[in-house]
Image 1 (tube, helix red, strand yellow):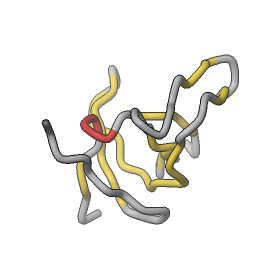
Image 2 (cartoon, one colour):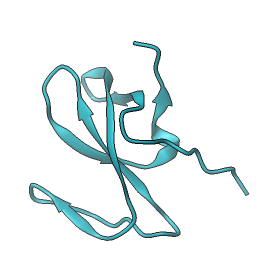
Image 3 (cartoon, helix red, strand yellow):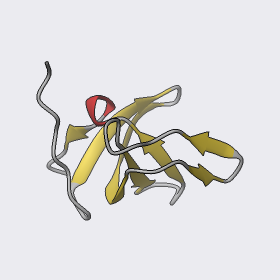
Image 4 (cartoon, one colour):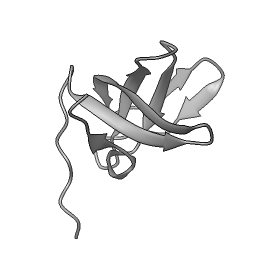
Length: 73
């Protein structure tokens, strides 16, 4: 079983998107189903996701922990 990454509000992270690498910050850990704009996020305590905010655009998105990497920027 893979060890879960523990990220906290304010952590700087980077993730890959269709436009390339995106830098941003963790806003919060999601542990319940929620909606971001029209996208349904199927987060749960057993399968959490993180709400992240892009530094460049300010857009918010939800990502699974394995999609996020700690960033020094």
